[in-house]
Length: 82
Length: 354
Image 1 (cartoon, helix red, strand yellow):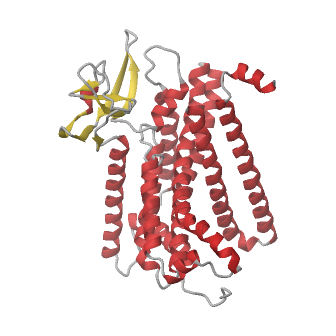
Image 2: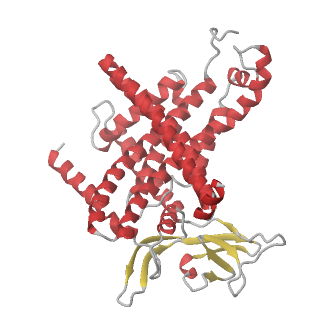
């Protein structure tokens, strides 16, 4: 019943799926990279002389997670454009 | 280093980005502004290099663009002509039709020929498109710069570096000391360092060229990133030693019953690692361009100063982030390539539980 109502409103349920998917992907990436940033800050506060290495590791881990999130974004873009 | 010319350089750079607003005008032929079409047009490849569009006194839009050569090969043979020939109403020329930047075989009326299944017939397209031309420009830029750097080393042998050599030396040493040596090892990194340096600077320069107004989105083209990922994959697997292949087909350190399950996982892993490299670079760069273009679309949707001024400021901020992403993605691609190559040539360690 709810899905019928939503179908009427949106015309097609496909772009809505794409939007929800993209939102969830960004949510996951945000949480993951936020945790990495937090731990990195904490590590740098505990041991300031390791700050350089910790920062490099933080950037690498963030880029890898962002790669996965952007994969999901690319898929959602394709779904939305079909 | 004269501090004041750095200030002028940064000022010029910022004015370049404030000029971005002019670019958002897209050929709508007087219709409603369609941000989706505008964005797709800006991130896609094209057979001409579109510079700007002006609206004349009669309301007609006049596009200023550089037509690029079209090189096609079909049963008719090799045909080379300028894409300016497609500038007619039907967008046809000599049996070819240009539709959404793809060239198909067509008849004289402009109807695209299809085969028995309804699939559109197309010639093999080897044209110099916008992305190809941009790659040529970046290749020329890199060859010029690094020939100058190499010449500097020859001239200053044994002395302190000077000129352009002193700008690139820290970058080259960064790639060698932070990426190549830690991941590949002191003894074998030299064989792979030219590839890593090439990949690093090639991706970085192409990312930067894509960010300037009227630039081409070369590194956001999946064929570009696929080629680089395939190169990394080929180099990794060709340098694999017996230990590397042994770890894939008969993973050590895991219980025997698990090994047949690990086998397809590891074999697929050979393919997924370059695939992830390809998607990561493509999606990061294209997503960055889409963000900037979407923000600028706001100005044209709302058509008000109250929206225009803060949005322009935000676009400058996002472009600064995109500059960072340009360098970071080049670094990540190079680092992961070095990691994969290092894993492939790593010597057998006795502490691997076998």
